[in-house]
Length: 286
Length: 326
Image (cartoon, rainbow over all chains, first blue to last red; front, side, top):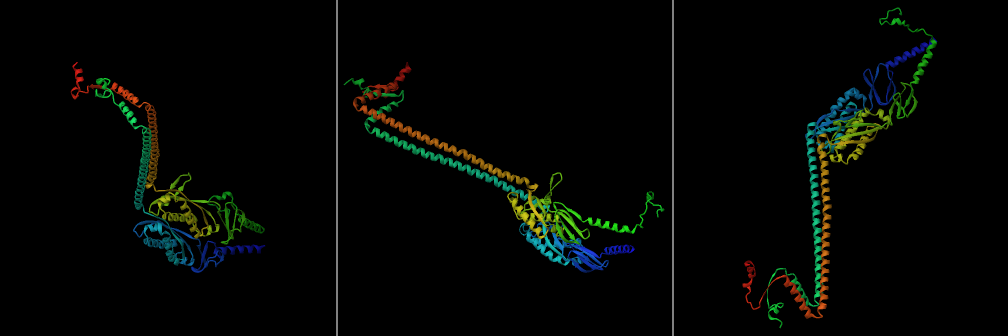
């Protein structure tokens, strides 16, 4: 019994010693490690799993294998056409060579400080070569690509791979916004005026077309009226002619008598006894 | 040891130190219990909406679905769980508060358009975890990454389009493009995130210019109102003209009918008269003449002179004189 107890106690003691001294270390799936021997790097561990090292003398430093985030503060950059842009970018990066990383920048915060310098200067250079419209509209993807490439090159020496840099926001500073707003307002006014005068134009056209059509309709009707009336007159002339030609002399006689009906009342007539009706007044019956 | 005065006054509990001289046979059961308890810590439950990744010494050994499971206790195996079926939502340009109110976040919402105008866009990005392993171990700060990628993509898309398009018909096309772009970038990062939907909530011009935009809308309405008014004028005038034309033509037709009928009447009268006239022309002639003279003379103011009087001027007006003298 005493023996067993002694063995267990010894085992626990050794276990505690080993654990405290760090003979084992676990590298997680999203981690990598650098092993230093008395401060001097001896190896990189990139595969996850359980590993052994010399307790106390060797030390493991862990680094993330994940894609890391660096979200820069927004800052003002001047474009080629001398316009100010408030640029807010982010950068995705990861540690690819932990040893270099460890030796040069040591921590993620150290890395971010370097990255900030690199990216800011690259963005300034790149945006300085493009106009505002190019930055906003036309070449945004290309600009981000260029900044990413250049920064990637420069970040290599720190054991960092720049995965992607993107402009999150590129906006005008407040004082320029005012100018944009007033331009937008005047542009809208122009459009509104155009709509209204287009409306008037269109309405005028429609009305005038209607007026024209009205006059044409009336004129066509007039033409038809005239032709109907003409036809009527022609027909009547023929009817009269057909009838009266039977005895023109008689027609003239009766028509003349009819004309006398049209003589108004109270006309003054001065007749002599020579006239046919009155001759009997003077001459009596012959 | 128990005789010593405790500065905290704990001695009144008459605290006895455990007896380290316990029986050696107890050590094994105690150790056993400790081992069993340790082993029990390996039981875990994965909820219905979750998956879990089991790592053995940091290395991924398996991914399990919902239900009760067992893993070797720490430090051999560890488990990370995540909600994989839930759809999460991310708001850009505004925030919804617990009481349902929303508030604009101007510097997120405001975007420059391709024609250098400014619009405010409120966007919802819906996403879920598509691949739990990638989601957990590939990228740091996933949530803020989705947000960064979404903002960057939205601005890139809006920056390529004109304001009128964005404000009117462009909404669904922008949504589709944004979803595609955000998903592509997140795939490049191997984030394990699946974008479910990108929705443009509100698309508005900024407050500073909104009244000018409203005026454009009312101008557009004015335009169609003016056109409608003109159209109704047309609808009034043309039928009126057609009615007038029809009336003119009917009048003319009436005129024709009337005139022809009258002519026929006159002609028939003439024909009939002529027929009876021909039976005794001379007498009829005289009779017609004299009858006419009779009616004429009875109506007029007749002055009869002898045929021998050569100049009648001297007599004209004398009858008036005679009347006034009386």
